[in-house]
Length: 106
Image 1 (tube, rainbow, N blue to C red):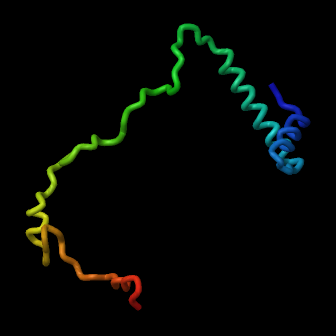
Image 2 (cartoon, helix red, strand yellow):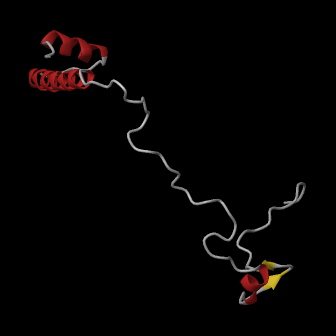
């Protein structure tokens, strides 16, 4: 099954593509081979074959969303044990942002 030059030009016009003579010949050949392959697939005997959306079974590739998976995490106290500074159960870090003046100040 081939595709005519007029068909290639029509598809190119629909896609708003300006093709050169070489491109028309190249894409005509490629589209013709694609149509031949589709015709061969269509001609296969699929009687008794269950329809499927994928040829291979699908599986979840994400890990379970569980706490302490795959290894237990540090406790709150253990995480703060070696901190250079802690306050009220949190890491204490140097201030890096200036406070904005309250409305009416400045």
